[in-house]
Image 1: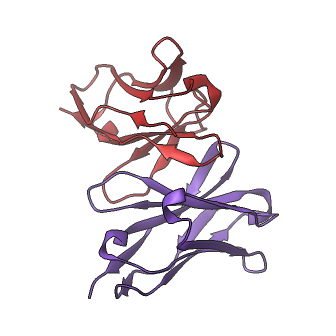
Image 2: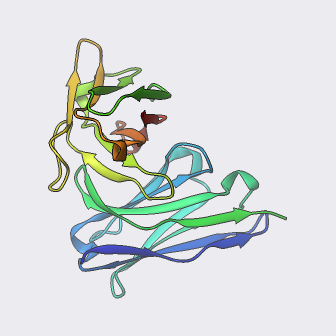
Length: 117
Length: 111
């Protein structure tokens, strides 16, 4: 069964960083890309960036360019999204999605990141 | 960059047909593929249409996608509405840098 399993909820202080993991099972990242999307409570979907599985090339949304780093570990089939200098506006559910081309059928269950002092 | 504009909410009765629009603010709708995602409360998004009109296996043929160059928009049509179709629907496309762009989402109520 092909699926993505994300790490658990996080509670962070403003100004710190968070690193969310996304582990694939049933398929490998080498043939796919991983997108990261976030959703604040009651709000729409917002794209943060992506990583190509085999090359490790990344692209980031301009809004997050200075604060986000997406990586992957091919040995464990896990992708990571790290967001730094957190503020309350970063409180959201963060999703990873895997696929290729325009077809992204595999989504993680989401990771709630709460930023609060 | 461009924006994708969707109606905030729609309501329709079971058995009826509803169409959700997604209008591109600049550039041509056909210049990059449009995808549609369904998101039920408390769940991750799920792809229901990709490459403008392709339906993944397992998605009922009640769901169909199209693009219209005259209105510079994409549409998701759901026929034979069922109560389980009640969800939020998002269109998604790409900008010139291959960055994902999402519409604001449409809340569909089936009652």
